[in-house]
Amino acid sequence: MKLFEINRSSVAVGRRGAVAGLVLAGAVGSLPLAAQAQPNKGKPRGKIEAAEIEIVKERVNQLPEATRNYEKIKIPAPPKTERKVTYTFPDFRLPADRLNPSVRVLTIRAEEPEPLNGKFVKLGIGNYGTFYGRGYLHSTRTDESPFTYGVDLKHVNSLNGPVDGKNSGVSQSSASLMGETYKGTAALGATVDYGHERYNFYGYDRGAGYVVPEKDVLKQSFNRFAVKAYARNRDPEQTLQYDAGLGFKYWGDNFTAKESNFTINGKVGYALGETSRVTLLADASFISSKDSLVDRSRTFIQATPAYELTKDRLSLSLGATIGYSSDTVNNVGKTSLNPAVRVGYVVLPEKLQVYVGAGGAIQRVTLYDLSTENPWLNRNLNIADTHRGPTGYIGFAATPVRGLELNARATYGRDKNLYFYLNNPNQPQKFDLVYDSTTTQFLNVHGELLYNSAEKFRLGTRLDYNKYMLETLAQPFHRPEFQASVFGTYNVFDKLLIGAELYFYSASYGISYAETNGVRTPDFYRATDAIYDLNLRADYRVTPKISIFAMGNNLANQQYQRFYRYPVKGINALGGATYTF
Image (cartoon, rainbow, N blue to C red; front, side, top):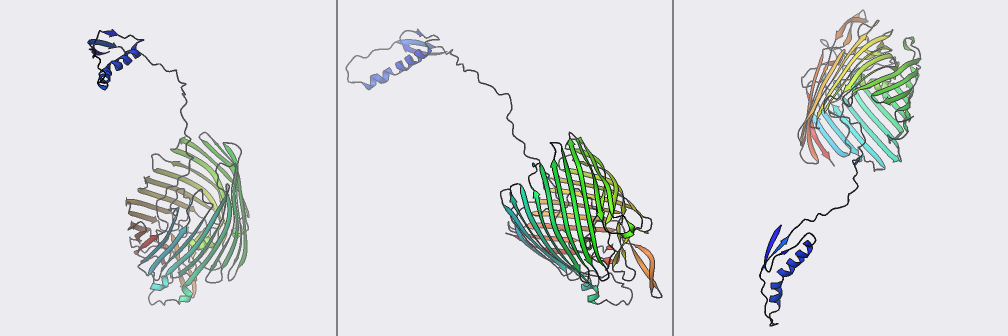
């Protein structure tokens, strides 16, 4: 309640006169102004005596009830995408010192993906007369773009090596082209790859007074060519999923060996409902190879039909793998039939999944692939596809806390025609393929750990234990029993990135020979030294377009022998610059 005093009597304004009282107060307040505005009329002025107005504000404004919606606004969640954490560099190591694992069962990706968009040129030089160059040109990969394309050129060479200077030099060059176009949910593309590599057979005898072989005798080189056309469905919501390709690979060496390989591969999945689907994986390879003594045709066909079910926490896959290989080494059958069964159960959603399964398949073996593992191969090799299975495995995948991934798996199986590398008795600097004449039983225990902290710090490790149970071979030649690696990167600040890799390989076995009356016979089995290999790298961004880098390999300066008689370079360093445009 508010009180106003005027020179009249007191007036009470009730509930119904509240508005009138306000009008009256306004009129009274305006009287002096009106009197001053008319000074010439000559009328006597009235006198307002003291009065009191009481205003009572008791009115309540009532609004009609609004319709209330108790249902919360639903914002659709973004589609889940598979996020593959990466933690190293694509070109971290120099060539010819690569440590090729004998068993590859990795589930965490170990290499940095190529830039989503970028055009850069990278140049570097190092000791041992090393030169490195790379040119990378790729279009931006976006959903709106009707096509993408890319060109990737690489070259690295070391004029000198660890043995007799240029006699152990190496060079590698490659060129890759890709293109992809989109029409609706379909993607059509093609890739073309070419590579040329030069090596030397520097594993020759180096006893007292040895004579250095001629360069033409030492030289080995490989030419590689591969082309592939493919079509795939890029919409994961479609009922029918497919990914099919048709390709051709050519490989040739410095001598007379050649290999031509026509390949067909495809994956098809058809959804029967929201929780089930049927799938088919198929591969075929038709090889024509030629060497100085042998001309061969090798056929490989394999298919895996399966039924898949995902319900609540349970995932189930039931199928079988049917394969055919025309190879007849060790009288192994040409056909193969193995189960393809996997059962997974989510113990803790998004935290822990366990799985168990049984499988097996024929693994295609080609000169194209073998020469990337071991470039010092002999001529006229007896190549055969590996028949693996049946195998059984059990494992788990876990993400106990944010940024941490764990994977572990144990596999037991039986292999037929599993190859090993063994020094040739007449030319021990070259390697033949040898096989256990019976089935090789093996046990593999694999583990992986990766920690990623906001893309700033990454640390990971991989471990593999391989046990081969042989009957006719004395040792699992050049297949180490234990392999481990630790790797990490740290983004010190936006301009500086450092990384490290540490490898450990247990000793593996080669063989030495003694010569009696011109005949070379096995002398004793030689165990190579255990391998410790430390690599470091740093990248510093000088400007948004220019950065410099430095890398060091084998910083432990251990001239280990991944393959018997072939020591690698000691400490080798490389430094250079990158220009991005």
